[in-house]
Amino acid sequence: MQAVTEGDRRKEVRVLLDQIQAHPERDWTAARQRLATLNKLIAAPPGKPSHPAAH
Image (cartoon, rainbow, N blue to C red; front, side, top):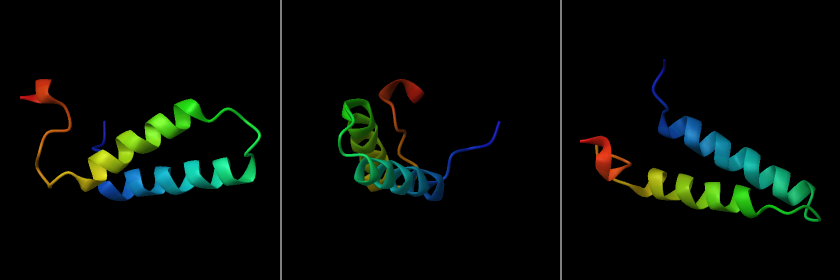
């Protein structure tokens, strides 16, 4: 299993945004929640666990 990098997260954000823009008629609720999560992970300081139970 490979670690997920910040670059992977940024790529996923770009893909989701492109999909939302290409098909605004769809229900993107889950994708928007994922985007919020990804943005929080990207904004977090390096080395900080993304989940409190990760200790």
